[in-house]
Length: 159
Image 1 (spheres, helix red, strand yellow):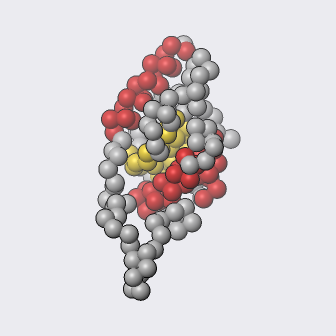
Image 2 (cartoon, one colour; image 1 turned 135 degrees about the horizontal axis):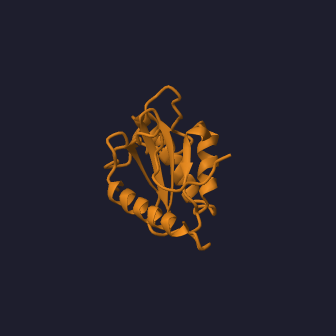
């Protein structure tokens, strides 16, 4: 059975790697220049403190706070600890009951090359992927699965 879980996990990583775009999404365009105010002074780029959780909004409305939160954890010492992402996302307003998380260790106890986590939002999913294999935090909106989940394969319980 552990062999089957490893195959499913490898397939999930392959699927998500092919689906995840590193290009900016339309809801978060890449700035071409530092934004400025009327006085000509630079304004800071959006951070977790400048974007907000939108409870009645769409997945696209909440991608900026999802991304800012994931980036914040990625920049911390807990950047390869799956639970740190879940706790941080819950702290800004995402529902833990709508989340999924893959293990941050392999079936033989080694650190995972990548960790995926998601938040189901209506019929869509906010999905994040981090780890040594990605080299950076990646976030994307994907269609939800027919069974009401976002990730394929084994996930860990979230309390």
